[in-house]
Length: 335
Image (cartoon, rainbow, N blue to C red):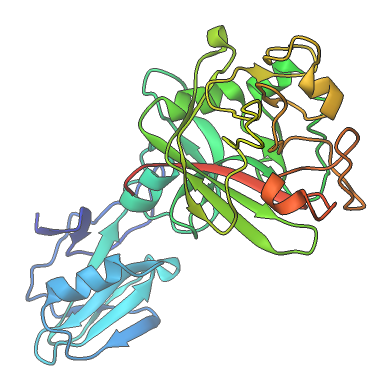
């Protein structure tokens, strides 16, 4: 069987046939490099005088939704074909050869693996399996930003977060295509399967988006109350609100803290239950955090600390307005 390996993606010389059990199969009737066949499908991009067939295939592999190429051996033209137009029939065309991408549809450990090693380039819900010894589960993947696995998403208040109890946060709740919490058990499985960083996407009351990236993120198992390990703030369009020290007070530092809910008080404050007092929803508290992304949603946009609103101190402290939307997403470091 003739095949080329370009950047870890398999390209086969052959005729495409329909998918079987979710895996794209290549016909056993393969054509060699002198096949004089091209795919009869609309061309998404034409590249003239590209050089070799291998360069044509590499360009396809680096282009979103490209699923096949036609390559002319003499004039070195490269036609890239949208995967949505496959399978396609082959036409007799002297001088032309074609190659098609065979996607790896096996379940991957996270969204970045799906993006890098599969043919998934669109944002949406996918199955992942961080631990091969545990069942797979569904997540929302932010592919447009580089393959992030979303663990929390809020944008309109249709799902109530602040009044959910321990069991709900353990198992997860909401709609993966809407607002949701992935579930602490799944977050633990995912973030302990490798070295992960976390990015917070935050929209203020006026519709302006901010972000903040932290070097590492994981949570321990339920037996340790989903204790948080989060590394230093790295960079972003807003500043740190996770491990923040205000006026010498270290009570808002979240790293190393246990998870609390309305029915489980695991914070370090002996005289107060931060979750109940601030309507913060399930969250990590030492004192009471300046970042509480699961707090009671503010439909009118007002932020009133003990009543309603989602705070991220550098954005909301002086504005008196709650965050409108939040996303927490993780990805293996170095990608």
